[in-house]
Image (tube, rainbow, N blue to C red; front, side, top):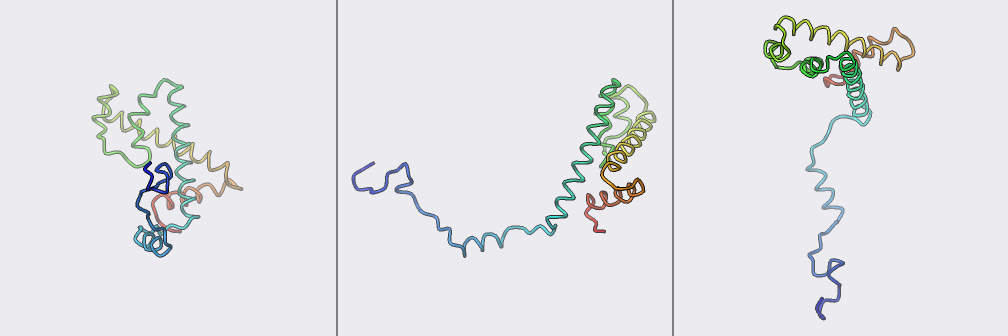
Length: 146
């Protein structure tokens, strides 16, 4: 610190000040991209994603417990979004035919749906609401409004 600087350097002396004027702040916020989703919709989307993650983790644990973790890992991308990985390539990796890889993926999808129904059944008042809730969750994740 020199004798002519009234502010010590450790507290920002000698630095250029940036205005935090509310007009400047408002202008900065106006150029930010807007998210059309409401807070409620964002919450629902996060909840749906969390639910699907929970289902995938349950399926992973079941497959691991039965010694088929490698199969799960190879096919998990086909469960939700639909992987672009060819079944012939996956089958080769797993030591099975392309057809067997397809059948195994189909069975995993079926098991995944069962686990999803079980999880949703715990969140609805009546069992009859499960299918409606599944459709709603899918609409949330796909961005469609109901």
